[in-house]
Each structure stands twice: as C-alpha cells, then as structure tokens.
Image 1 (cartoon, rainbow, N blue to C red):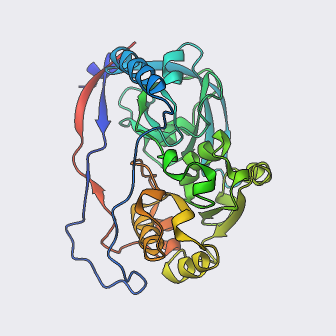
Image 2: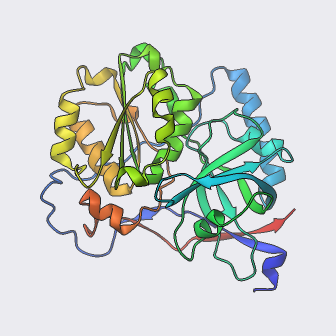
Image 3: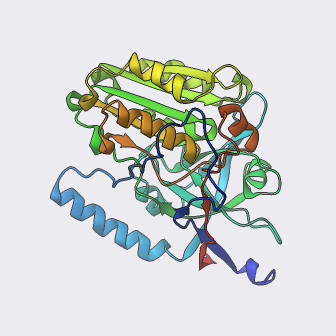
Length: 336
C-alpha cells in the first residue's frame, strides 16, 4: 500500500452522519429535540445560466473527478496570535478549471500532502470568496498527526494535492432578495469562520438589509482568526460580535436573549450557521421556535473538526449528541 501511494491516493468521502450509539443523557439547557438542518443548491439566476453552469460542471467533473491536481503554496502565515491556525494560499494558475468550479461560498475540497506514510487526506473549506482570482485560501487548524498539521508546516513552493471542488455551498437564494430577508444572523465557531468569511466577502447585500450580525465564538481572542478583517466586514454592513467562550456559553439562554433582541418579523429573518453539529442543532431549534422559516436557516454539509477543549468551552462536550462519520467510501485518485 505504501508504494502505491506514490502513484495513487485514496479519496475519503464524508458519509451521512449517524447518531451516537450511546444513550442521550439529560441536557439541562437543550429542551428541544435537535432539528434537521437546511443545505441547498448554488444560485443560478436564469435557465440559460443554469444550463451553462451544469454543462461546465459536467465538463470539469469529467476531467477532475478521479484525479488529484498538484498545486504550489504561494503564501503561508499564522492566522492567530497563538499560532493554532494558519492561512495557506494555493496557486491555481495552472488549474483554472478548478477555480471555475468554485461558485458558491461554503464549498470545500479534499487536500493531501504527498509524503510517504503521511496521514490520509482531509476536507478543507475554501476561505477566500469565489471569483477572487486564480488562488484558493484555506484556514487550517493544526491538529497533531493529521493532514492539517502537515499543511501548516509547509513552505512557499511546496506542493499540495487537491481534489475537485465539492458541495453546493450555502443556499444564498433562500435569503435573497434583501427586502425579503431584512435581518440575517451569522453564527460561526472556531474554524467555522472560514466559509462565513467567503460569504461576507463575496457580498450578499448586507448593506441593503436592516440588520446583519456575525456572532463569532472562539476560546479566546488569541485563537480568533481574521480580526484584522472585522472593520472591513463592518463597512459592508455586517456587525461583528466576537464571543470568547471563557466568558460566554453559547447555550440556549444566551441564544434566547440574543435572538429576542434581534428578531422582529421572523418571516423576514434568516440565519447562516457553521460550527460543531450539536451547536448547529441547538441554534436551529431556537430559531425555529422563534418562527424563523426552516429554509432560511442555512448551513453546509462540511463540519469543522472542533477540538474537545473548544467543545468544553461551549459547554457542549460529552452530550452523546455529537454525530460521528460512518466508515467512508473510497475512490481511487490518480496523481496528474
């Protein structure tokens, strides 16, 4: 197997999530049954655009479906003060068809560092906005013994193998036009800020809405990336509310208090949530009980790998509701 890895690698697809087999304990703050979450398709505005997008995706998929693309690192730097995350820029000038496949914030791709006996590939959400040039930016948390650790140890000029752009991204059409969804609340936890950044910087008409707020939770300010972008985001109409989990527990009482002060007409309110699955379930339940429509609560099928200490800070660890991936299915990827 080790020798075959030089020529072929294994693509791990995320399989549907299943509930933990362990009994669900009594949860003092979770009074609602976890709700199903909304994931939907990318936005196309006309039938002609839709047909063109489908044809282009089919052409690109035929080329990239069973192949890795080797791309160089063009920049790498710490993304947080405590250096727990790094920001990697990949040069895709040699793979413009992959760039064309990235159409909607919230899409992700498989990454692999080609080292003998190295860790298996890992899914990374694309942090840069679509149509922002021939490059992808990845926000990566360094976890020992994983592909993310290998990524954060790379240098400019090193090569990363990436698979095709995956997922449909946020169903942005469900919160458009702005006059139909005047209030939007964004929730991000830890590296879940990655696709939220792509959404904000791609532009979703925040300045044309009455109230758009980002509640961004991290363990502390030293582990919170993108702080240098907060002012620019606010200039686009997004009010940024940092949450340090040493002080605020993102549990039901906090959410009730927060949303009670924001939601006026629930039918014109939307939400975007990226974080641990249990956190998305809790937030979704509160929003639905406030009358927010299910289709206006957006998330994606990529779940950031939140470390246990962060879950502890949320007050969410050990609840028996954190869902695990089943054994993944496998396809063979060849190196181009």
